[in-house]
Image (cartoon, rainbow, N blue to C red; front, side):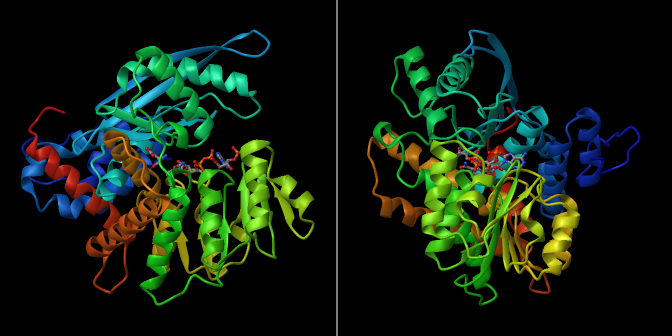
Length: 463
Ligand code: NDP
Ligand code: 2IT
């Protein structure tokens, strides 16, 4: 995607202010084939420009480039052996973006689409998200173009071990703590943790999202989805609207979608859809707890496809190759992947009367879609705020590992609820416009940015 046209960009030295369009254009020139990274950066810079320029000392310290360009990117080859004895090769990466407020922290994604642009966008977003959680965590992201889809358990284990053989030396409980993301759940985290332990002879909290038996936090699997719905409730409350009884479009059928659906059901809402990369299912009767249990078994144990839902529940309809945004509902929550709602989809949602969009996924709405949501003044929250519950409970897992304690479900859930409320409050503080509309994008970006910026200033020019 080309957002800005540019000739050669020369930003004058010694200037006291930052111009977002110039910085983005310069980055686009430096990194010409990284559209997702440029998309994420341009959205953030456009909304923090005003706040940034209130602090001439920021520009003097060239804070903006230091904030946009990752500290380092570790890149490696991963060799593993498939079930037929073939030696296979994939790429592996860790983008360590910023550790001004805590150790690098962020998930690992295994998906065939993974590349440097996608991981740079995710690591950049993670910096602001982690700052919003109020916990001491810097931002990072890693992954591989390996796809667990269609692989045997043994193949996934050998891949995870090979991946960790390359990564182990760059992570540590006070250095960089990875976790899950697309294609990386409890199974993959377990295999990677086992390999780290085998290589280092140390049992330490180098990953979050671990199993309950070896240091994992209760509620971590649920946290992103639950947090997403807690945030949604807060948004609705600003307009005096109750979630109970509302119909909801959900995309994805993985970790975030499943626990978003679970919490929606618990709070009396009616989820109508879910999806995978092949298509979506629409259940006009709503997905209830029993049907969700079926989805969890199908996706987590049998590793099947979502179209099977429509075979199990004949009232449901399967739409191959399509996304759910054309179905009429009150609320939408995209929980699959980036750029899954484009301008056309957003317009369909608006035309169908959607009142709120809460992002479970990272950057699921294109810039065109975001503009349509905001122009129509619906409640719209970017993923870095609404899906921050996952990494927040990862932070709580790190705390529990450090003190060698295991908190109860209730304790962790209370913490999560409080953190999501705090994030919402911060978005309102920095995002409320003169006409009363809450611009959650601006609120989240400014709140996340200020803390990191102040920490960077206090620590001098190193990183
Ligand atoms: P999972 O791997 O558990 O599930 C991903 C789901 O999205 C699957 O249903 C998958 O379908 C679908 N999907 C993946 N890629 C695509 C694609 N290109 N097009 C359409 N559908 C796709 O991942 P998570 O649930 O963990 O992650 C979902 C989103 O939430 C991601 O954006 C992630 O970055 C974000 N997120 C995750 C957090 C976490 O704690 N796990 C925390 C915060 C954000 P299929 O089975 O066909 O691949
Ligand atoms: O995007 C995300 O916030 C995650 N994938 C979770 C990161 C984490 O470290 O728990």
